[in-house]
Image (tube, rainbow, N blue to C red; front, side, top):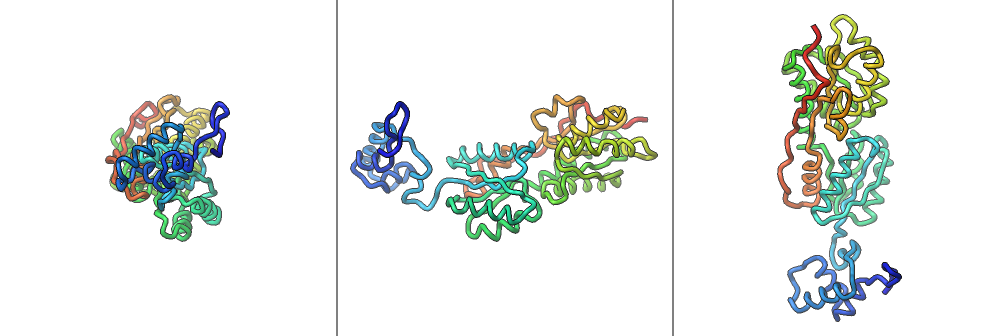
Length: 333
């Protein structure tokens, strides 16, 4: 036995199990992978050896005699932000539910060379598929080029992007229903695909209501970005025909914006309404509690994992939902 286990004992290996059961390591691998092409007595001997030796299945053992490592590679960036961080956590849960493991590497998603290097490191480990979290405009073309035959998927693209657009439209529809006609947009970074989808949703809903954006500002998804632009927003709100509502592209920017507006002497929602997107875990505890859009990140992660691995879908992804809270109200008289 080759590795130390708990209490100073040696941890059993695949070879130890094979020797105890009197079979090859490939046969042990077939038992581990639940192959149907085994005689019942052979399977029973291997399972007995596993139990006797206290062997714990590992990913390397599963790959013996197969063409899969049962590992999904994830290329991620900006994991300190709530959205990407939640996406990675959801992918990990979805991968485990599919009896797979996650190998995650981080890259500067705005730099194709950094993304390519990260993907190559994962591909060198023999991952079965690549999934991108927080894709930028330049990310997917770079990954498609390096991935070759390895399946590639991304969160919040395709069907996911459509739900992002629909969710952003819900926030605008909510504000229009309250009576707002001068609605501004606080957008995410222009090179993020999620930001583009949310922008399209806001603009489409405004257009459907016969409204032009009252103003457009851009941030980097962070609360600091929302706070830093608050003075400019406050000046616009106090101006003639200024916005009576701001639809922020995520909750963190909305949080910073609200704090900055209050510091500028404005009241939310009495002077200006603010909405977010994501319904992060803290949104209900903002002051005021944030009106936002809830998306099914867990369901989206399950869909993407299944797509990447060629597995049946585990269920439908829930459509986005508007969560109305205290940060939105009818426009001031």
